[in-house]
Image 1: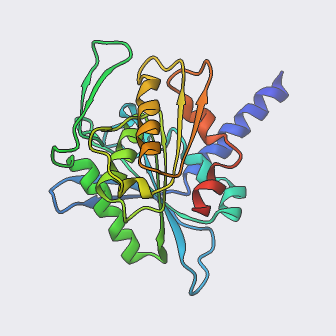
Image 2 (image 1 turned 90 degrees about the vertical axis):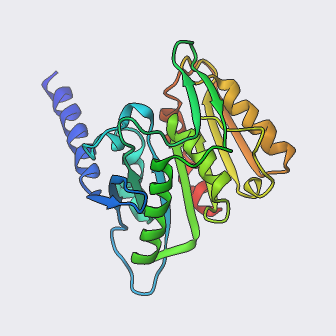
Length: 255
């Protein structure tokens, strides 16, 4: 029993150490928003080499200003010793303010799953605008490959992923939205030029799986390169399944 407890303790310690590899920083955006963010650089920066950039957008439950909670889901995938060796990348994990949102959507929390009304004709939200400005700043300051900028996000971050591609289709090389949704009415052929791998659980009690299904159908109608993985019996935490996909990083970074 003591041996098992020791193994559990060591596992948690290793994960905590992985997350400590993310630098803790802040960005003052031109729209006036102060955006806390974490930055993970490749273990070894080779002279003259350019590295892919990954933007990770967290869910609504991780909003705030502690510059910690946004790493709860998904961040450790990028920080493991194996993945840093096999998939060296610059990873940006901003934290949305407590009252902010990554996406232009009205959320009705009185229903189960939530009622969502997306409207990309509205101005971009301040947090998403700041996050994109941050990415562009990193592209200038770090040895980044501007042709290999990727985005993934979960729940609210999945919604933000769809919207970021809609608003900035030329910035990103591929996208992996998890249990999100988007504005199917306004999604464009330009945005559909970006490859997608979309994930959702069919038992999601927070964000209805129909949101991802609708985006998949819209993208297919626009002749997009789209891959869809739906997990049977999985609730809102389909990010656990998505980030555990053996080819997640390989697929993302090969596009």
